[in-house]
Every structure is written in structure tokens, then in C-alpha cells.
Image (spheres, rainbow, N blue to C red):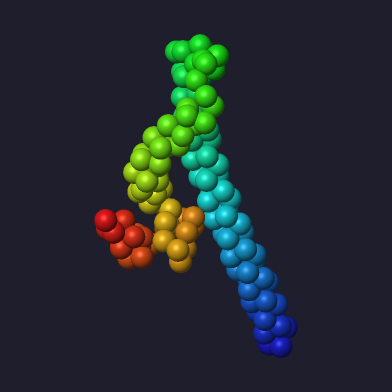
Length: 127
């Protein structure tokens, strides 16, 4: 009887160790999935930037050789970027949220595992 009890006790200890090991593997998988998704998004953004810059260079190669002062062109570009960056930033955050990531300051960048987040939704509803 004592041998059976010791065997069951040993088996229980092994199961506890396996449970702990499964928990750590699950956490590592979650981290890898988050990193993979983040890298996919970053890759998409870099492809868009690369495509946009390639189109700009091939569309008008003479723009780099223009006689216009450098400050004037740079200022116009900065003003145009400032006007669209706010809208683009909001759109990017909304896209991230719809792809399953938190955009709130509490869990920013983590995968949403349990449906909608009230913090994220309140951030999206701000004007």
C-alpha cells in the first residue's frame, strides 16, 4: 500500500512539473506570435514606404536636380506630412486594434486574447 501511495505521489509531482513546463511553453508561443505579427506589420509598412519612394523617384527623377532652395522644399514636405500624419496615425492604430493588438497605454502591443478592450475602445472613440 505504501508503494502505491509513493508511486502516485511521484506521478503527481511529475504532472505538476509538466503543467509548469506547458505553461512556460504557452507563454513563449504567445510572445513569438506577438513578435511575428509585429514583424509582419513592420514589413508591410516598409514595403509601402519602399513602393511609395520608388514610384516618386521613377515618376519625376528631375526633382532632385531642381534649382529650388532646400529649405523651401523641406518646409512644404513637412507641412504636408503634418497634415496627414495625424489621420494616418489614427488609422494605423485602428488597424492594429482590428488586427488583434492592444493600442491602449495599459497593454500596448500585446495580443488581445479576450475580445474587446474598454481602454482601447475609449481611445478610439476620442475625437
